Image 1 (cartoon, helix red, strand yellow):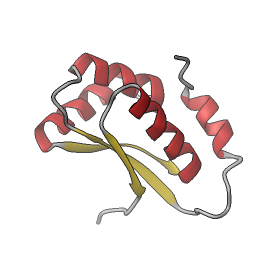
Image 2: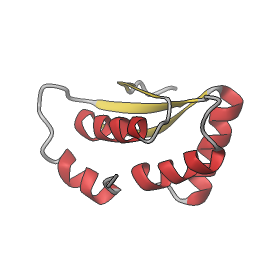
Image 3: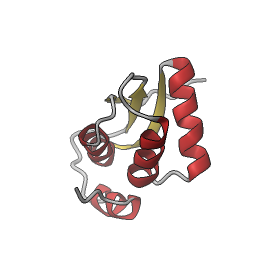
Length: 100
């Protein structure tokens, strides 16, 4: 499969619909069928994270059962969500609520 890089996601985000304003986040959930290396590769490819960031997200997900891995407008976050899902990761898309 050909996955988009972050630059292409950004370009597509400029064309987002006005109906779903605000930010959305992709949450990665811990599962028992993906290797840490696969998760790191996916986060680097889709979310444009460097190796250390991706490793830290994988570690947080393993220890805390979930981790926010991507935040952007609805269109771009949905694209990242779909790509990560197609790569076999257990993810959810939800409205971003900034924690205090």
